Amino acid sequence: MSFKSRKELRRLKIRKSIRKKIFGTPEQPRLSVFRSNHDIYAQVINDVEGKTIVAASSMNKEIAAQKVTKTDQARLVGKMLAALALEAGVERVVFDRGGFLYHGRVKALADAAREGGLKF
Image 1 (spheres, rainbow, N blue to C red):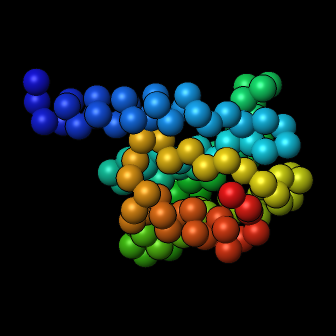
Image 2: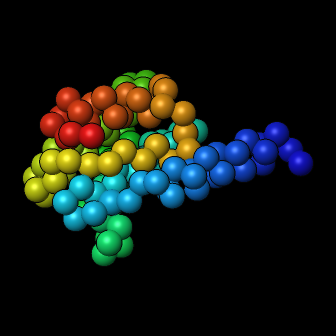
Image 3: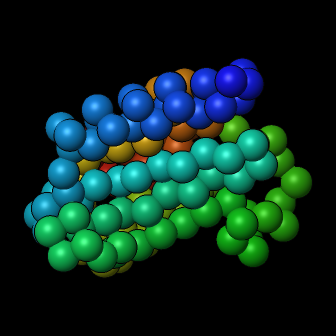
């Protein structure tokens, strides 16, 4: 088994244990984060209905056009997501880090979402 597949399996195992405990409701939806090597994606999900309320990613034209570091891109995504969520009437969320360590880009996104007005 290669290093990458072991690493990926470990993350998926952690993700599975996190998802056992975290569930998004209409009052307090789940803020899910996915981090690839190049981009970062975040969405606010109502798990009861199985619907995505709002989503933002570093592939957005306004964010992608800026030549900044990946951590700064994550901050911009967090601020954009918070603004979209507040516009949609969502103030409180449950944070789902998706098996990634709460460090670096994931932490930057979470902190920016908090600064943008989301509570979690």
